[in-house]
Length: 602
Picture (spheres, helix red, strand yellow):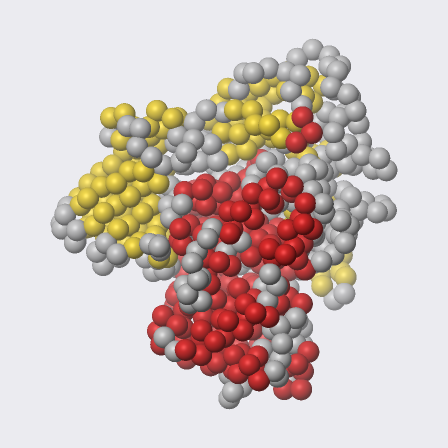
């Protein structure tokens, strides 16, 4: 199996709209959590009294590559301050998590797994030569304690055992010592086997379980990809088999699986937790690196261009815990939440709606997506994600100028010092593909460059908007990697308050989104006309989307879900038209904070 390797933040840089998206993130919640949020600002990881488990590692896992991709000196210095503090508390035997020796037996070692992973990210960005020895000693201690029975995997550590393999592979590549293989085997033996949970995925229940937990499942998809080499197991593409089951019984129009907080079926009014968006993207990045199969890159694009921006505010200061496919309001439920196991405010935009895990974790998604634009294997370089970016190494300098996915033309400039093969992934939905003006039906573009060669490559293709079938005789509109929705206009109601010692104040307060326009529509025409207006300073703007689709709709008697007046019914009460056809503009799903995405066609 020919694996692709990731580049580092010193080699890849975002450009165009992608760089702007990262700049918005840095100016928002992700770039400021250490200033405003007690669980990061005053964490036990750095000697404070607040949370000393997953939140600081989660935050650093995204904050570090964000800082280095943007070459922001202040952010880099703040990241180092945290890393220095964390390292200073490491025990002589290698244990690094903030608890007493007596508490180790009851300390869920998911935190060991994620801090080891986060430190590898820091090394790849900073080159800090302290890190390999630190991670080595963390894992050695972990192996010893697990093997001796001093600790066992349970709860989150048991459910996320495969996350440790990011660090295991990092250390094994340097030392090839057998104890790492021993650790890998122990983790798999003690960890959850999700294949046994498949029957539970086909008929989700209103019951909280680790093996139906949507974030655990999103992480799990990469487990075989990251573990098969060191375990010397044949890769069988189990992820694709499990993906098919998840999609059939819990799929959404944007490539997510419902999970609020555990798997929630096919209803368009069930939610999906933001952590799962970030983790599913990360899994797909590793699945492409392992297999080179285009399906994982296309699935990654679907999440990045739709699910991710949809559930975070334009300024990236607030986010939802749960997003819904058909989301006509984000107003706190006065009674029982529509969600299976989440609370009544989980769909509000705020600092930490429901739980704070997403507050810390969502910020890894965009930086790691940017780092997946290019990968390499031997003397071959591939452009995995055709987004605006730049690759610069000792041997090659490649730039991509484009506004994809909002437009479908690309200008590549390639310069090499030594001979390479440069590949460009072609999306399966591309039509009328041209390369430097010449038509081609190639499924992948490949160019052999000799030492010292410079090459300009101009690629263009068309993408046709189409109606896609959804369950319950509903339809959604898709154009390439973009899904479109009927946007619902809204007013915002701001809530500033303090709860449990955590202050919410502008711009990181909570917001309810109250609908002020109609949403009870059905498609009434086959016509779908693309309109492009250009990318603004906010790439996924909810006010000025870069691309829209003109179509015709008619109002229908949709109705509300029984017991609610801010949730549309799962399916419409009637598809009989209530009036004449109206012309509307569909917005990209990622731009429509309130939206109807799955609606009938009459």
